Amino acid sequence: MKIEILGTGCAKCQRLEKNAKKAVKELGIDAKVEKVEGLDEISARGVMVTPALSVDGEVKVKGEVLNAEQIIELLTG
Image 1 (cartoon, rainbow, N blue to C red):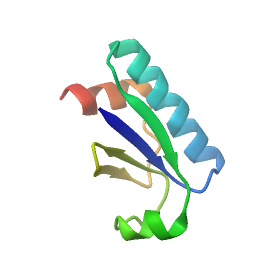
Image 2 (cartoon, helix red, strand yellow):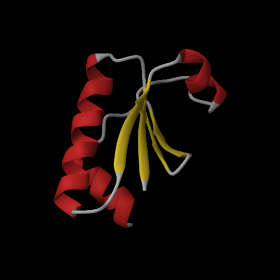
Image 3 (tube, helix red, strand yellow):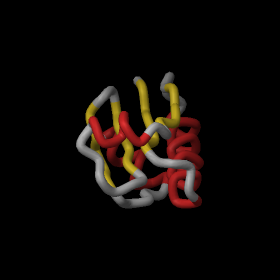
Image 4 (cartoon, rainbow, N blue to C red):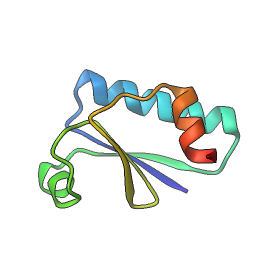
């Protein structure tokens, strides 16, 4: 599984990345959490409000900072 945090590196983006890593650790799954910071790539994915969270190439959340429990629900749900 590939989880990407789309954002320019602001505090909200950093918090979402931290929460995603916590969720992956709590679930004990084999997943990579990566950051995508290039504005061209972010906008090419249809994201105009950051941060955004993408799972296996599909943008799931835009403009929100989910907590670890919400990310767990999104990944298992």
